[in-house]
Amino acid sequence: MKQIFLVIVFIFLNHCVYQNKVCFDSSKLVGKWELDNYQINYPELIFKDDLTAIFRSRGDTVYYYSYLLKTDTLFLIDIDNQVNQCKIKVLNDRELIFDNLLEHNKKQIYKREINSQ
Image (cartoon, rainbow, N blue to C red):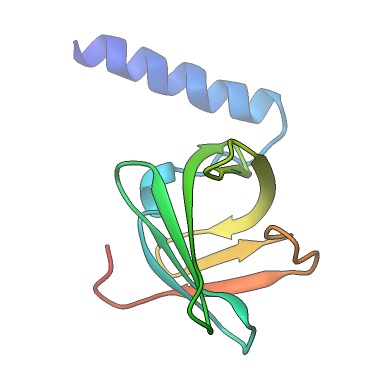
């Protein structure tokens, strides 16, 4: 069993290197993230283990998505099954940086809320 797991991990990592893409671990996405500057839409993002995401606005609007992380792209699926692709530049334990996030075509920098993992 351990050997099969190691082979799968090796193939996955090899695929990412071969494709010359960064591969992010979706488990690092889980938690609560806060935007580092003032913005009306999406100052807070919550990613859950069950592949659901909650995006809050500074008003009273809350957006719900299903999500999938593939290599360096986050796919967000809304309730109408519309799919949005958001390119991730950085994903680690403290920081999440998007090249674009939904309608925002500029860099979006989020910091993980402490104790949100």
